[in-house]
Structures are given as C-alpha cells and as structure tokens.
Image (cartoon, rainbow, N blue to C red; front, side, top):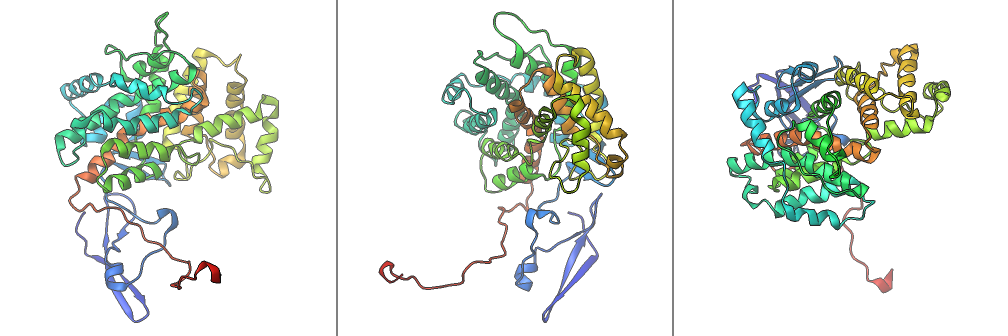
Length: 431
C-alpha cells in the first residue's frame, strides 16, 4: 500500500481520531479505519460491504461510471478482441502479458493437466442423474484435495503454482463431465491437440460413436465468454474465496467455496435468468407487452440481461460479446428456435426505445452469453458452471495475491448486535 500524507478527522463524543487516507492508482481515495476499534471503541456499519475495501489488489479495476474494466491495466475489449483466454489467464496470474515462449510453455503446462484422477469418476456416480451441475462441481472440486496431496501446502510457492495450473486445466473437464453425467452420456476425455475452448466444446458434445468437429466460430465465441468472465474485482464469489483462503484452507476448498457462492441466482445465475425470461415471453408478438411492463413502475417485472449493478453506463464486455452472438446466430440460425427469435427482436426493441437509453439499460454480458450458450445447445443448468470455470483463474489469482500478502489476516467481520443483553437462565419448570 502506498504512503499517504492525507488524513481524515473523525469526531464523536469526546473523541477525535485522525485516520490516514490512501490514494490508489485508480478509483476513489480510501480511509484506513483499521485503528478505529482499538482507538475509538467503535465499528463501521456497511451491510454488503459496498463502501468497504477489504483488501488492496493489483489485478482488476472497474470504473462503473465510465464502463471500464481493466485487467492489470489492459482494457477488457482489447483483451477479448486481440488475445485469448489462456493468455489472459497468464496475465491475471503473473501480472504481465507473456512472451511467445512463455505463453507456449504455459499453454503446454495447462494442456498436460486437463485429465482428472481416474478414481474421481466414482464421485459422479454418487450423484443423482438429475443433480444440478453446480452441485456436482462444488462437490468434485472440493474433493480434489483428497487426490492431489502434493499441492495442498499453501506456504510452498511451488505447490501453490501447481494447484493453480491444475484447477485452470481441470475445471473444463469437470464441468463437461457434470454435463455428460446429467445427460446419461459417457464421459469424453480431453485431447491435447485442441485449444482450451475447443477442447471444452468437444468434451461436452462429442460421443464415442462419432467424432465432433469444433467449428472455429463457436470455439472463438466460447473463448470470448471465458475471457470476459475471467475476473471481476471483489464480487461475492471472489470475496468468498479470499475469506475462505484467509483461514489457511487448501486452494481446492477455497475454489469450491467460490463455486458455491456463484451458484446464487443473484450472482452467477443472471444469464440463466435471462433465458428463463425469454422463455416466459415466448413469442415475438408478446415483446411489446413485456417492454410496457418493464417501463411500468407498479409492475415488479424487470428485463433480465439489461443494465448492470456496477456499470452505470454500459457493460464493456457486452459490446465484444454482441459480435460473437451475431456470428453464432448467423452460423446456426434462429428460424427453428423461438427463444433466439425473441432475443434478437427484444434486443432491437429495447435499444430503439428512448426509455431504456435514458435509463442506460443496455444489453449486458449475461444477455449475449445466454443467447450464445442457448444457440450452442447448452441447457440453462450449464450456464453457471461455464461461468464458474471461466472465473476460476480470477479466483486463483486473487487467492494467490492474498496468500502472498505479508499483512494478510483471517477475515473476521464484526456486527451491529440488536439482540437481548445478558440474562439469567430460568429452569424449565419455572418458565
């Protein structure tokens, strides 16, 4: 953390505290309140931690007003357009874009770790066939700590490195296995001659009876989905990973905790909610009705996939993914899929309506990723698992940064207690 010469004065009762103010490289200044309890005997109250910096980080920066998302300083639109997912993984993990040799070596390391321990197959058979893929992923990723004992020591930098590469490599395999298990089809092993996104698509859609040729347009669209979801600062699941990691938990347990948090519909389920809304609309002729409902303040209906809690202007990831959505729909067509027909017409209607422009309710990344995954043939239950495997590198990067911070402490939020004060126990016969 940088030095500071600025301070903030806090006065309450007969006390006055002088608190240091830190200026980040980007974003608002931060008041350091770490001495507040020790010197002032008070806490701050901030439900949801929306005004609290729980850590300092060099990985990702978001400016919601400008619609800006930077990874290590690089704009997300440039990375999504010019780079690819594994290069972005390297950037997030190590802080700089790799040389050609470094990238090749990193890609080889990831490729050589895509297989999972054969005994892990038994874990899948313990789940019901109709189990949600996120339930399976949470359990299987947590169980990795039972199989990979050589990467559990978080004090060993080399073991942390091995665990990081393993999870980036194996999460697509685990997600694809969860998908195959839910459909009753046999697992498909990864292939080392395919790129990261193509390998995932093949593991999801190939069958032993015939091979599956990955279309480059679909592979590129999937790679962009991975890239655009790689990290997003201190969101709920990332904070969960950091909080779990602060206790010294092994890396697999920490990532499993992040997956469990991402499963919440308010977090990772947004693109699934978007597709469910499109199904509710049903047909193109009903779009005006739902547009009117979205504009009615007395109606609880909201257009899912439009606007964003963080981005107050536009979602910078959506612009890039719209291009891929257009390419995928042109390739696969929408004639026989009423959901995709509704999506395309809803997008046009909302963009053309002054109300949505004024409110800055533009289509976001969840809208376009949901359309792409639906067109590819993924059920909505797989949307969040794909989000999870994409976000794994962000979680790991944040976890590694936390572990390497000499000032790191176990997370321990405080509370505004509103319960009963001390009272004596009353014997049951006297109550």
